Length: 402
Image 1 (cartoon, rainbow, N blue to C red):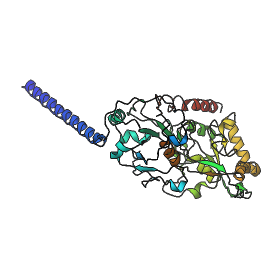
Image 2 (cartoon, rainbow, N blue to C red; image 1 turned 90 degrees about the vertical axis):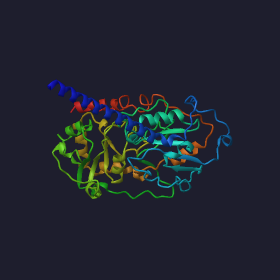
Image 3 (cartoon, rainbow, N blue to C red; image 1 turned 135 degrees about the horizontal axis):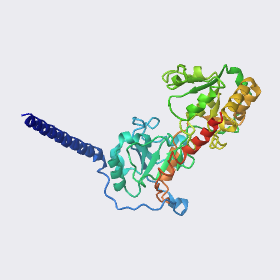
Image 4 (tube, one colour; image 1 turned 45 degrees about the horizontal axis):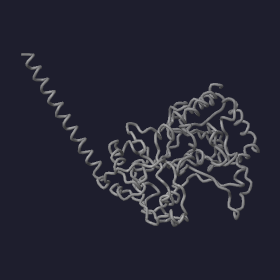
């Protein structure tokens, strides 16, 4: 009797599992149909992409196409559509003195068939675009369409389970200087001739506090450096990771922290990834507060990227202790401290840089350019192991010196 009951139980369980499996398969089919419905406008294409080189230049007039170009922002930006600062159907090209003004933008994925440029916010792909969807787009794209890889995160930001088809992207829009279109977090420029340099200011006079660090992404190599640094100087630490150091300084993102952070002489502008050209708002906001940023590397903080003489790099010192001693010296020497603001006599910085709409629109109208193709881009252009790790190894050796 017991064996009969067990057999019936097994039969019922197997049947239940089969029903669940069939249901799951059907859900996937429906999801697939739902995902691809807007892609029906893409017809099959036998197009083979050309080599990733520019065509020989013809006379400018012959290269120019005067048609209005459509730019599709395919993914949301961290869940938001329209993207912040891209709310209208045009790119404010008339207000930016752009040479080419015939570009419109859309967020409607049903416009994919008529779009000349399709921009993907890469960190949002795992959440909003499936692998099959990407493959379908890639197989059926038209010859003239370009796909753009846009991100302002470091290469440490992974795509999870999503696999990008090789050769999918034609353009890159990132903070890296070797991007097709550079989109950094900040910048600086020489003061215009009609603008008088600001009067000399004693920046130290308005500073009543020493060093602070705001950090909410825990578990990176920068933590090891700060732990060593705390052996020699006091650092006020704010953010989600402050408890690691036994501190409980508060300044929530929803509040105005300017009054809290502005009195500090130094800001630890330590990025969560030591990747080439990855200089985020941490650095530019520190300059805006008239606080000297302390950075983890100096390899790409060159004079063509950041104001010369505006920061302190840990790589300029043989040990963590040596850096601490130098910061203590600057804290007691107002003349030496104020030297870090001498660049303000010649230059002006800005903490935000707008999307390079003019450049994108202008290049879209250049028909002399063959499509550029990124092959193995996650092994070359966007590879944390090949890029960021080498900077981390250099920092590790410095930390070990104490």
